[in-house]
Amino acid sequence: MTALANDLPVWDMTPIFPSLASEEFVAEFEALCAGIETLAALFDTHNVNRRLESSVDAAFVAQYEEIIEKTSALQQRLRAVSSYIGCFVTTDARDDAARSRESLLSARSVRLQKLYTRLVAWVGTTDTEALLAASGVARDLEYNVRRAAEQAKHQMSPVEEDLASELQSPGISGWVKLHANLTAMLNVPLTVDGETKSLPMSAVRSLATDSRREVRKAAFEAEIAAWAETAMPLAAALNGVKGYQQVVRKRRGYANDIEPTLSANGIDAETLEAMHTACVESFPDFRRYMNAKAKALGVEKLEWYDVSAPLGEEGKSWSWSEAETFVETNFARYSHRLAGFARMNFTENWIDAGQRVGKVGGAYCTGLRPGESRILMNYNGSFNSVSTLAHELGHAYHNLNLKERKSMQRATPATLAETASIFCETLAFDGALASADNSERLVLLDTVLERNLMVVVDIHSRFLFEKSVFAKRQEREITVAEFKELMTTAQQQTYGDALNSTHPFMWAVKGHYYNSGFYNYPYTFGLLFGLGLYARFQASPDEFRADYDDFLSSTGMYDAHTLAARFGIDTHSVEFWRSSLDVIRIQIGEFDQLIG
Image (tube, rainbow, N blue to C red; front, side, top):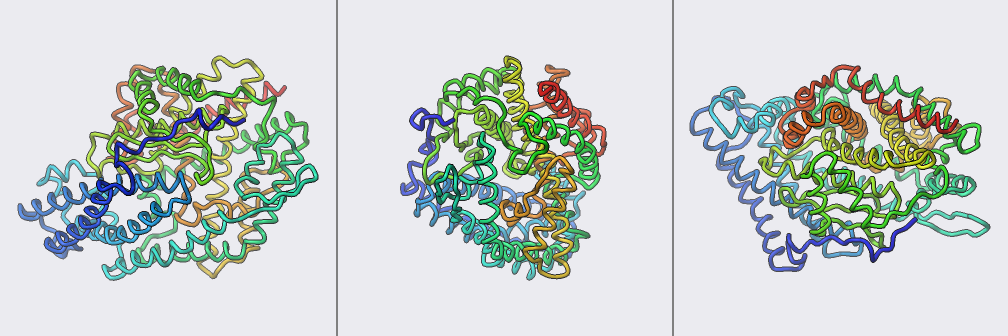
């Protein structure tokens, strides 16, 4: 199911800069690089480093407010330039000029990262209460100030922090690039209907949604064989990444490998424990879904390659104009502001939707100027693509609500970044479900339940895997066979007996393992938190509308537990997470009933 490329929009980048080669862009790029050096000089002038004397006087307040003002302004300019370049890199892999600019900006940004580290040390070793009492700027950034005090406790010496920043590019980033380059270039021989072809790994993996079981099986077996051939360098890369992360974590005095990610994601250990407890409780329900799907497919038990198999006949093909109308109509069920914002994205050409050679797969939303974003996707006319459009527009709407906040107040953690996107995606799903007959409902429910299965069950398997990798990496490097065993064990613990096979190389597939620690759980949080908020919208629409946009505008100003309290949500309570999973249980019940 593929929409015609000439029917699909291409985003317009000219309101930002005329082009990458334009005088305007070149001048801004050079000014940005010079601005980093100017900011560094200001940091030196005010001795922005770890303080031995924590007192606050009028002179210090003036210095603090000047530093924050200049840092915030540079931060916003960097965000715009970086996103602008990224839009060209991701839509044309052959754009050497964009890649060159991206590489140069990355190198210059190391200097800025060092300044951020110094700023955290400077603010974090200051008398927090005195600073908040004396400075209105500090009070506006209270969450950042208090976080700096906690983060400063875990900083290494200035020399060690400097070295860690310097080693990012030639060290851990090198392992990340190794994984990205190897997997991007991986071609897989695949025989289907007696014809053997060499296909990129992305194309082979996409055959997991083919309606023919023999094709899915052949693609899965070919994929596994290809990963086995390239597993050794990928294992070296993963060992390198996790080894680096673990050394730095220990040097910074964190108790375990999860602890440093909690602060970065704006949650606490109690929240994570409560969420995971509810998730584990839900696994039998997800196994009931998988067993029902096996019955619908006419097999005794699902194999790994059956999980994404389509049910029923190919669904309706949505033209782009139909998708626009559908999304706008359903967004209006929340507010005219949300619907009008979607229309603005369509009319202002803020979306690049077509599939073409050189464009990355998947979808994303990137903020450029305050309140203005760009959305990349690969639209194919399926309802899944319509749902993706609604999801990414949710991210853009979140950015809109952050527009009036200061730059440092807009830094939303990954856990809360999915809030608006899940909410908007659910608006679209409910709209489609409302007018669907039984056969259409079955397909729609399968689509959303497969997503939920991935975000709750599969992601928990990745969490367990990563936890076991960190534990074993403390002793020594991990072999390919051990990575496979750890992955398989984690999948068996979560999927249970509902699957007849596993994917032992999922650690090679997912690039997230190579550039972050415990990337997984924020997505689970985002889904379940978004579903919980949507349930409150359904229960009391007017009351919800009165608070929700302001909530979205505040996601960089408070931790998740504090923000959730605005809607009477206690993220420390297992009951809240159970209530979100109850939404999914109802879907599973209907799916099971429709299968019969």
